[in-house]
Image (cartoon, rainbow, N blue to C red; front, side, top):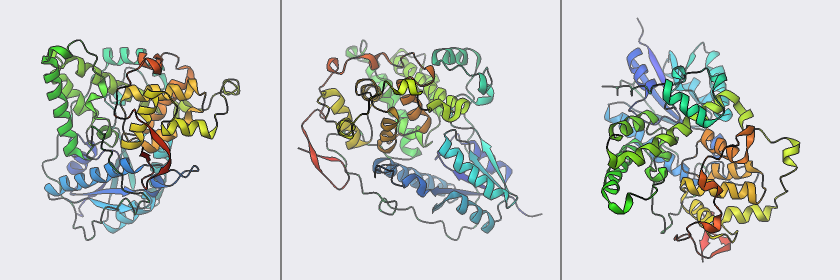
Length: 441
């Protein structure tokens, strides 16, 4: 009897721990073929000549894939890396290694689902099945107290019902061993230059550096709770508001170097300790927001981020290219707004408070098309996730009757906000350096 080989198509699940498709493939097959494809679609240039994926996020992704390969090698396995269209590459590898089935985690945003459909169609011609798994949310779709079509559009209602009537599943075990077929050409990771990008320049004012990979993700999770314990014991911090983004886990969550369930069960371990309670509670809330946006995309599809009606659009002024560029480059004259945008452009990351406020300013003060802001964030953010990014911008823009404010801070006037930041400074409008960031004056 011939051996069974399952191809595991890694996408936004770049981890060994709590990875259902990897565990299931190990259990069901004699050998597993792990594959990652750098799809040129995500590195193309947009109509505005910007990159769909910026260099900070691309560097992070390259590091994450390299770390996954290293982790697999520790199990005696290997990761095949290719650059090209997955709908062409995966069938080729399936034929070469006599694959019996292909596993992957299902996505919800239309670009990602469209690529899955292309792969599925190509495999179907070979009489191969693309098996879909659900592994990007805290709560499994099948454990929700309502079918997808009946998920409440209101986040408070969604949160209340889910927390009351659903349970978070335990993390799946980590495979004890992984057997791969004899791989003749594992392939090299592409360079930034090969993907059409320049090496990012790390700004000296940046207080964070994000190293891609599961190894760094687990270290960051441990560090977050260690710092929470220290701050909880500090008298000066007891009455201070701690922003949930202090965990800074979002880049690793975005590409699946760590799963929401791993974070949740670590939160669960610490919830009874008052030293951790505030931070843990806010972190859990952010995981719920991630779930909410993903399920909204699953329920509504593109309708969730549809354009406003003609009547609504009449209220939106034709924001000039100059006005939008001033916002994007941090040259609005509002110190807090400008500081946030300087930091975003220079590092690829800003805290959640900054994101809400600069988005609110662009949409409601400048009356700009919110989709332009969402596309700009898509390029710049290290932790870009389609559902969270586009869903959050749509929420702020009031699409689909999302009228309640997500964060009270979004209603704060920028002039009332703290402006003590290394990024509040004078920046030249030109020239630009090779990385495309404005040169500090």
